[in-house]
Length: 294
Image (cartoon, rainbow, N blue to C red):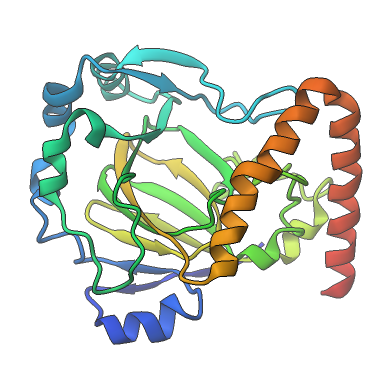
């Protein structure tokens, strides 16, 4: 992979952000965006446990989905308090994603400010909490609604691998899905990495970014960016989503959610193996074309 660091700033003006990152669709880490939020000092495991410790949550392990796996199928359930106790005891490869903690503790909305000076179109009904135990992995994908994301890390360190959407075929994207066939687990550790360049040679030419998020860091992830995340320590982050301003961007998200995903779900249920075989053929044909165009 051809990786470079992401630009990092302490603070940034709205004009500079829009000119150099938002419009060019270039990722950025902002160090100070969240430091004036009450959440920066207030949010921790004990506080969340007090607020929503009894709430039952869906857990996900590190196993990648296959031809028979419906999208977003949970692997286990616990109360949020039980989950926190588990991941605080040491490495635990379990994560929670798309948990709208604000539905259960609406007072948390007062602990941060929507950064509308940077961009508009925030989906204010759905700020989301993402939580993971040490060693847990969010496998390579792009967000199905193709929104712009401001992803703020509040606890623990997290390693992030990013690729612009145009690199999708070098990443071995599964047709009618937002997922990669390749496994990027431990990509930063040569001794533990699961990347198989003999099976996925186009990955060598994929151009992306590598970074580590720490407490208070906010990552701007432009719409359509592929991302793979690994929890170096148990931690949690919040994502604020903003719809693309263009009609084509919004329609792309609608198609992904209600057209593409529906077709994939139907065929996974009715013809899983033939559907998977067709996808796999397309994946490698697309990767070969991408290599030849390089």
